[in-house]
Amino acid sequence: MDTKWDAQKYTKDFSFVHQYGNDVLKLIEIKPHFSALDLGCGNGALTKQLSAMGLHAMGMDASAELLEVAHRQYPDFQFFHGDATDFMLPAKVDIIFSNAVFHWIKKEKQLQMLQCVYRALNDKGQFVFEFGGSGNNALIHQALKVAFQEQGLSYQMPFYFPTIGEYASLLEQAGFKVTYAVLFDRLTTLNGPNGLSDWIQMFIKDPFASIEAERRKKLIQRTTEQVRDTLYHEKKWYADYVRIRMKAIKPTTR
Ligand code: BEZ
Image 1 (cartoon, helix red, strand yellow):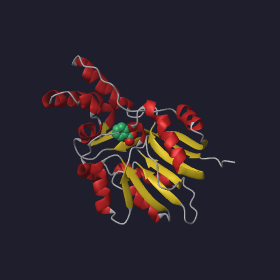
Image 2 (tube, rainbow, N blue to C red):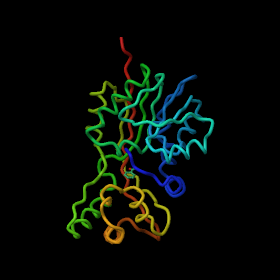
Image 3 (tube, rainbow, N blue to C red):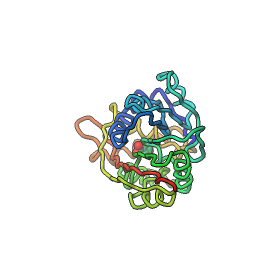
C-alpha cells in the first residue's frame, strides 16, 4: 500500500469515504477504558469518531501525506506510520477498526495482515471493518477493461474484492470467530460535473502508470462514455460500490 495520495483533494472531494464509515462504527461494543486502533486511518476523521465514542483511540496509516493531515486536524491524537501487513503495537488493543482499506492490500498479503491484527488484539478483542466486496465497481472496471482493450492495452484490476465466504475463511484461518457479515450494494454519489473522471484519476493509479497524459485522458473519456447511461442521472455521477462489512472476535486463549 504505497499509493501516493493528494491528501487535500481526498479530504475535500472524497469525504463520503469516511462519512459512510460512521455506520460501521455501530458494530463496536464499548466498555470503559477500551482502546482502539483505526487501521488505515487516512485523514483521521474516523479515529476522532472512535474517540468521541469513549474509546482511547489511535490511528495508523501507510500514507505520510494523509498522516500529515490527520496530525494537523487532530493534534491531540496519536497517529503513526505503519504497514497493515507488518505491524506490532507497543501494547495490545481491545478493538481494531478499519474502513475502506483492505481492498488496497493484495490477496496474497491478506492472511499476513489478519495475523498481525490477531496478534495486536487482546483476548475477546473486536475486529470490525468494511471495504470493497465482491462486485465492487464492476461496471467501472469493465468499462476500463474495454477502453484499454480498444487501445491494444491490457487492464489489470488492481484491487481485492472478496466474497463473504472467501473472507470469513481467511479470518478463521487467522484464528478469528466471525460473528457478523453482510455484502451490500451502495450506489454512491460522486462530487462535481466530472465526478467519475475525477474518481478514476484519484483511485485508479497502477493501470495508468506507464501511459502518457493524452492517452490517459482518452482512456478515461472512453470509460465514462460507456457507463454514462447507467451511472449518470440528473447531472450527477455515481459509483457502483459494493461493501463487505464484518465483525470478528479473537477468542479467549486458555
Ligand atoms: C472502495 O472504497 O471500495 C474503493 C475506492 C477506490 C478504489 C477502489 C475501491
